[in-house]
Image 1 (tube, rainbow, N blue to C red):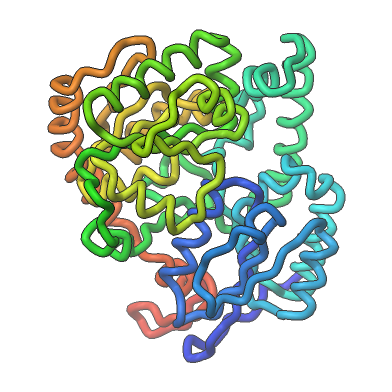
Image 2: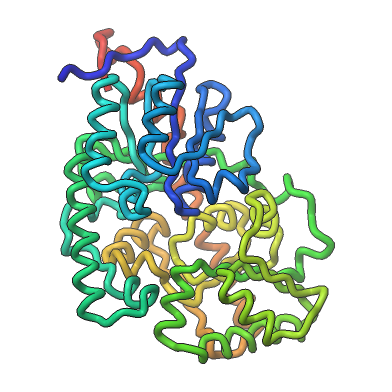
Length: 401
């Protein structure tokens, strides 16, 4: 089949962004779109959970989907020049599609000569199933035995490998200063204009310097609870009480089951807020304004906004990404963190203000290096130009990217 024809750069092209049910992919998609709008016309396609809580640019065209049939219908109605999957690998894991229906969707897009791109949360590792493991994730969420979890893990890895075979010749996009040598061919690396998320551009809270934020996803909570049981809840409860005793306010973004447990244990306080679901704009404000933010994931999509603002982050665990992709620690430390290894706190050990201050200074000194790495990346607009438009090379010849 011939390649889709290149488009003249003066044409305002329409691009369809299909987001899987993953908050990290939602964040990546939104910031990619924010960076290209209004020069390009974005159409956003969301799962129901994200669609009902949408608080995005009102000028964006936004649809929801339940099945791949819904996606096909939007493609027919909107006729985009390109489709961006955030991420194509996760749609089958979300039970939105089977491998066969995903293959049919990709063939449908190709037949319409639509360019296809995808993000890749598995950082180039899905081509070898031995590089991934879902065993611990499944065991923690399903409560099933090790043998069955291991078997189910291989089923998921097999499914992902087939999707990899379908997508491997299409451009893969990664948000960060990664090295091409660490990734397969057809990889593109970008960095959005994060300046619109600077701390000074947000309305300050009453006393942000005494506000601490804890961010814990469902999958990371499941892992912690599976390993430690109620001891994890006990330790977390004590750390929250310490923050309140120090005179600070505490905000917790966590799964609803954990929220209910903490509500039963902790006394009511105007300085304690526990959310299982925060509107996106509210979350971003709390994230950027807080004095300290604590994660259980080295590779949360939220990190870049803290880093850009030189606002300290702390970690209690490497997180679920390193559990699924062991190689991410080496790849992520070398590329994303530019060689810096963030220190970890122990949730069972009392928080020490002096230790946090020392780690904050270490963080700020390394943040400058990380920011320089991101600034070396091309912007999303450059990625789109290189893929969708014909340009002239130094000799004046037409060149397709």
